[in-house]
Image 1 (tube, rainbow, N blue to C red):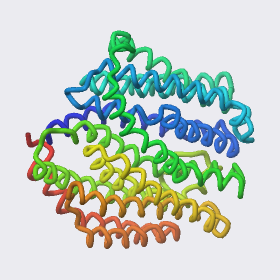
Image 2 (image 1 turned 180 degrees about the vertical axis):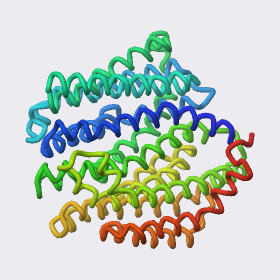
Image 3 (image 1 turned 90 degrees about the vertical axis):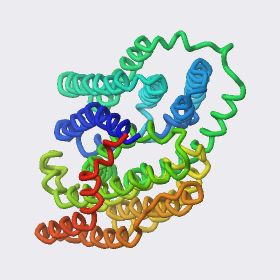
Image 4 (image 1 turned 120 degrees about the vertical axis):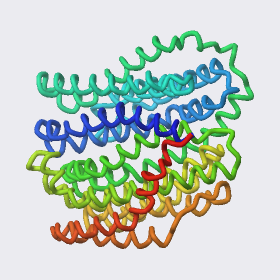
Length: 459
């Protein structure tokens, strides 16, 4: 089981890491072409689309992947259900065109937004089928192809044709559409679209699993995007653009975590006994926690340097938001690990409740802190919301699966990381690096033990 996790992690590293880092490195290109305000609007369109994607699909893609991992699932019924739900959802979204057009910042880009959501959902459901069918290499390769297309189209549409916001979004639409067609053909998915094969029992189970994820998605939107709207309307889209660039630094940690998560979700479903499952989860979490917090500390210390390479000079001040956002992202990474317990146990309602708690904290934090501290208040609200989600999931998930967690060590690490945020803001690089050494010392043992004992190379 460890070897499978390592193998999938390496595979997704080649695909996801290279792809995401390449897109990440294009940020200076974007910021040199788009103004602060344009970048802020572009970020709002993409983030709004990313929220609508699971809402339009009713979370069915999560169900396609989760039930596809069960060997007894009928893939024809699975795929047909997923595709029909997505197409019906897109039709409903199209009926909401006038409502979307009434949103000032989005009014000129509604059709583009609808296409973005449709292509992304088709790409996602075909990708979920690839994983369910065990075609992990094909799935990874499709990610590389998608990135290559986005990069090429961005250069063409932004630099050559100067399409600005439209070019940025259209690049993603075309790339998702092409990759969806490639997956559809390579997997022969037309053979699996058979409405007569749909089993009511499976459909009921899928919706029972995915429906609670719809309001959970709304709550995730509140945490991930509401700060952009608060900042845009209370301060201005130019500050929202700076905040979005600051969040790009934090996204490095999210990219690395996403590589692991893609592989991890394929390993959590098995016939292991509960004791074996708890030992497996605990061993993996000890290393994952260490990697997330050590990575966050190093990234915070380097945030100003990263920003110099990441963005045009006009965006450099965005580094001020990066340390707090990085720490918030680290909390989100740890919280997502405990959410995997709910995935394994098919308890999506718990994901909803814990995300709802975080969303409430985020809304209150944005409303109270942004008027007082500007965009930094939004960063703090994001950190607090993810911390609440982490604690709630860590406590509740123990009723399902007891994942070992050394809480005193985590509390001490949080104290060091919060101090490091302050030191980076004061531009005290020397002491910030001392904090890095402190975090590394705290988590050296699990990292060394994992390396020495070969935790991820065991069968």
